[in-house]
Image (cartoon, rainbow, N blue to C red; front, side, top):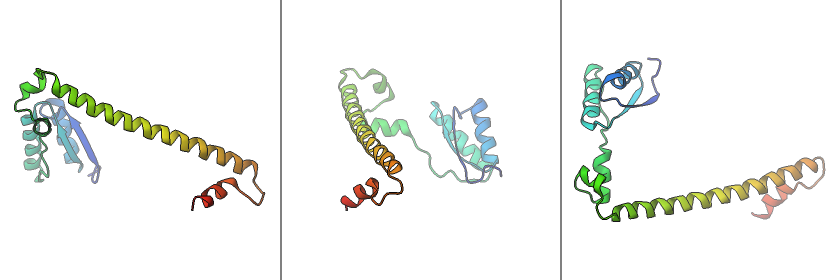
Length: 142
């Protein structure tokens, strides 16, 4: 039980080496998250591991189904076709918005980093004096 309390993700676990790896990690006590493009095979592997090792399968997440439901797609073929491109446009718009949010947060973090670095340098140069600009800046905001 060397991996007890650890979580391990195994891709390609429906068969072959991935399946063997998933079994071994489970035998070592890890909680194993199994995934594969062959979703029924991945579910079968999870169930086999649970049966062989007397474990319970806590959650079987069908991500393909969740994605199809979220986008209003009725078949897997629709995921590939996307005839009119509207769903691609929706996805692109959502991704573009999230990217803009991430970039804005990164800019904010860079500004904060710059200000804090400057304050730390000032504190280092003023060490031993009565007034520390870092403490002053923090007290001024309270």
